[in-house]
Image (cartoon, rainbow, N blue to C red; front, side):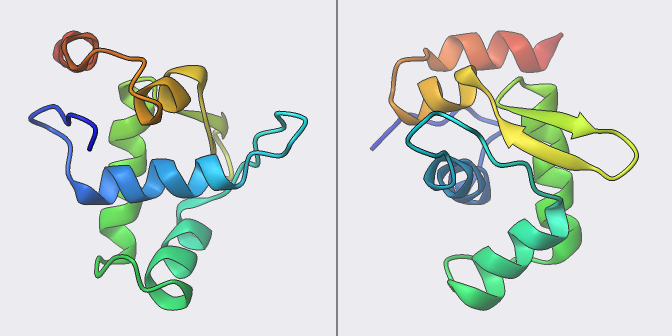
Length: 103
C-alpha cells in the first residue's frame, strides 16, 4: 500500500485511482467535473460513502497539491497530472507532497 501524507485520506486515493483508470492507452487523460466523479465513485461503483461537496473539496485540495489539474476554471473540470500518476505508482515521495501542501 502506498504511503499517504497526513492531509490525505481514502477519498483522495479513490479519486486519483478513478482518474488513472480513465487514462487511455495513448496517455490521453480524461477531464471530469466533481459531480461526475462523485456519481461514479459513490452511486455507481460504491467505493466511497462521501457527499458531493466532500468530493469537490478533496479535488480542490488535490489540485492545490499538484496531483490533479483544474483544466476549465469556469466549468470546474479536472484531470490527473504526472505527479498524480507518480503518487499512485509510488514514484513520488510523501515528503514532496507535504512540502507542496505547506506552501
